[in-house]
Length: 134
Image (cartoon, rainbow, N blue to C red; front, top):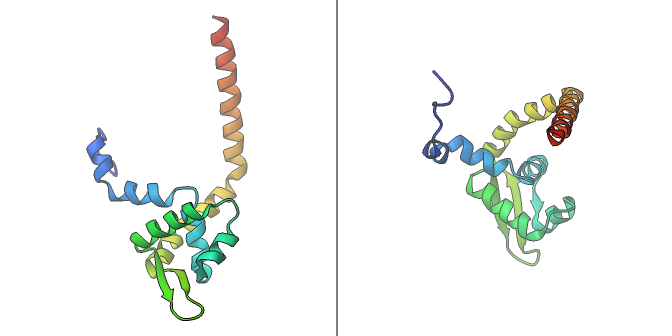
């Protein structure tokens, strides 16, 4: 059984639940936010302070998307200390169980990846220089 049908059509990609979820959680902030929430619950303002460079607007969008996918829970706190608390769900933690080994693999192979990138960039720059001489 093939993992990917050939040819891969636009409809195949649009209908693929794996691509759909990975494109969302593979954005710039989702995995970082999910990893923080897997360690403990956070209020919105705490999360805002915990991640530098993440705007409140994007944090809100990220949390909503993670909540929609069932990876994060949102609980409203009533009373004087009213607010919202976010936490990773069991589903979110189970996804991190799969993603963390990928991150560990990247760290183990960081030097090899960087060497491959440098070799590629050097070869590409040489190709560009040669093609401008033609």
